[in-house]
Image (tube, rainbow, N blue to C red; front, side, top):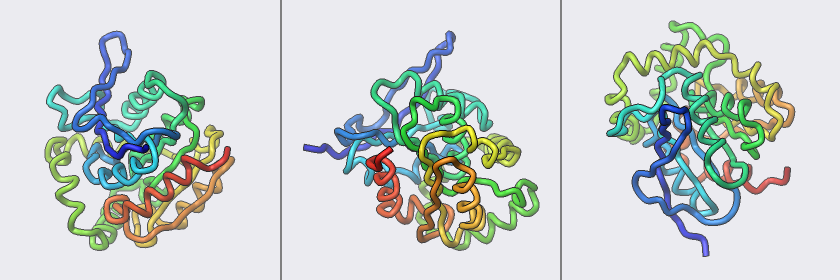
Length: 254
């Protein structure tokens, strides 16, 4: 029998650089099958809890809280894309079990992409959900405009899901993460990923428009693009549709 549950995982490092995991909340996950591991955008895991719960109905599911803005023990790594990707890559190395479906959202998609490139043997399939940023949004002015046009399409319920983490992080840390993601070129990293890649975007997302999804999928050796309903935070508003894509990656033949 499959058990339903969810776990929010913190990733820590000791002084020797070895990663360890401690769980918060329930440690009971869906049993059997390939694990789905979720990486949130801008260090705000709360909005992915609905998707995590849906994924756990079909198999193991985990949500990584990096860099851990609300961790009582303190943040586990820096706020920049490189530090986050290195931390997730270390976790992939040390966690027991077979390869996982690694899925990131927004800036977390860029983190997941770099982590998959660093640890290819630990990732069965990669799912990039609304990966940021297309080239025209790698300047701050156009990014602000796109963020505004996307925000008016979002469900109000996403605000309480992300606000506690944003307040704990503070504007300086959030800006550091966003600026490091702006400086990234995910289209170049995709050529180093050999596993199947699914790029998921929402029809009303201006930050990660459907054309950008299709372009990125075309850059992957084994890529496909999927367009779903909603705007940038579609995993919060449409968790069932999101989990359907993730479970498809979990059970798709290699």
